Structures are given as C-alpha cells and as structure tokens.
Length: 333
Image (cartoon, rainbow, N blue to C red; front, side):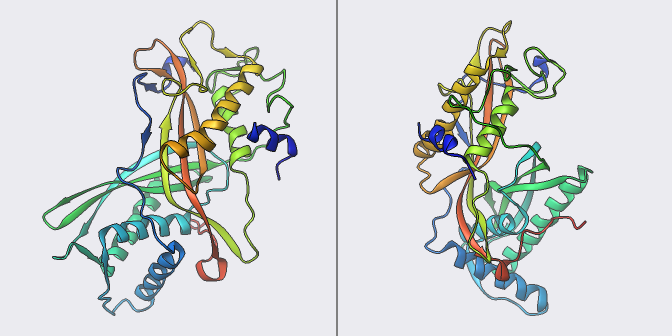
C-alpha cells in the first residue's frame, strides 16, 4: 500500500541510436474510434464466454446467434485481455506486434457468433505465435488492441496490435518530501546511459520515472475475495515534451544530465498529465492508467531530446474467479 507521503504527492549505447520522434507530432491515441459503451460489460463478457465454452464442448452444434460488428470486435479484444493479460504487474522490454485477420459480414452487416469465435481463436493463435517467436522464458503478453478495421466485399480486415514484455521485479521507491528522487538520483536522460556520474548503471531518467509513476499510479488494487480485477476498453495515448509542458524536453544536447530536483519536477508533471489532464482531454471518464512506458528519444530533426510516453488506460471491473478463472498463460509452462 502506498504511504501518506505518496498520497500527498499525488494530490499536490549512444543517444543517436534511440528512436526518433517528430517535434511537431500531436498527441495520438491508438484506436480510430471510441470504445464501445455497454450498460453491463461484464454480462457481455459472460455471454461471449458461455458461447466460447459451448463451442469447445459441442463443436458439432451450429450457433445461429448474430451480433453487431462493433460488439463482436469488443468481445474478442476484451475477452482476450481478461483471459491472458495481467495489467497490474510491472513489465519492461516492451515490443509491439501487428497482425491482420479477416471477419465475414452477413447481409445485415452483422457477424455470426461462430465467426466471432473463430476470429477470437485465430487472434489467440497469432498472439501465441508472436510470443513463441521472442524465445524468452519471462516474456508475457501485455495487451491486445484492435487498432483499425477496413471493410470490403462483405469482409472486414481487422488490424490487431499486441504488446509483449518481460516480467520484472523491482523494489518500490523510498519517497522523500519533495518526491521519490533523492540526492543520489542524478540521471542521464535515457536508458542505458546511466547516472550522471556512473554510466555503467544500465538505466536512465526515462526508466526511473516510469518505475516511480507505475508504483504511484498503478500498483496493486486488491479485488474483493473471490474476484479479480480486469481492465476493459483499453486505449493507448502517446505524448512527449514537444506536446506538453511538464515532460522532459531539452535542446541542449551537450547537457543530458537531469539532476534529482528536476527529476522530482518531471515526476510531478507526468503525474498530473497521466492521472488528470490526458483523461480529461480524451473524455476518458472512469479510465485509469494500467501501463506506463517512457523512452528517451531524439526528435526527427535531432535538435532536441525528449521523453516519449506511451500510456495505456482501461476501465477497472471485477469478475468472479470461479466463473472466469485466473489469468491464463498464453503459452503453458
């Protein structure tokens, strides 16, 4: 649990090898349309879950149920995340993968339940192949999103975006009155450039901020006994210091050290953006951050460096474990 100090804070190897990002880039969201709003999303997941179970136990039976395209896509994305992802754990080394699958539409512009289930099973198989290709024991699937769709001749091409990462253990930070960073926390702007006086530490200001913000904004929110937390309607927002004040942005490429007092200022600026300003700007009522990824980058013109934020949000719900089970490993040990 977080200390009173944290609650008070919430209230109140070369740089050129890093990814480039345009200074003029606008804040961006990963989805082309707003998430579906359902009166009872858990009941919707429960219904899709039952159809999945029936398809597995009675594969010879034909399911004549039909549903809207939007509902089918919502079911596939959110049931996958409910089943195979754990949004409350800290991960590093994130990768993003895209793959395309196809879904037929009937004459009423609807999707049969059988085709929706087939799309789900194909998405699970593709995600499993992605994870297998990374060939690392600690790799897990972090999140699956439907990035965009394209309709043509009675078929919908669905672009899936999946994130993978490494399970990571780290010690929660000790917080000071001014913030989580003390006098020894003078960091170079990006990983793995290290501390200002110790380049051998494979970290940087971006990763340090990422860890502290995760601990403060996400952490573990305990579910009721017999339940577990799930995060639905996920959205990913990108922004950097060229878009917002309060995020690291520096045009002096000769001075890339960030002293600890500036680290605390950046922490507070990011905290305000992630927890309040971004959700307000994108009308994401009820959303909370579930993944924070910060990378030190150069702008496209190489005249500045900044911190690119990739923040994934979701709406927290609780589901019964005896009904939906625990989070399943995508690849069995």
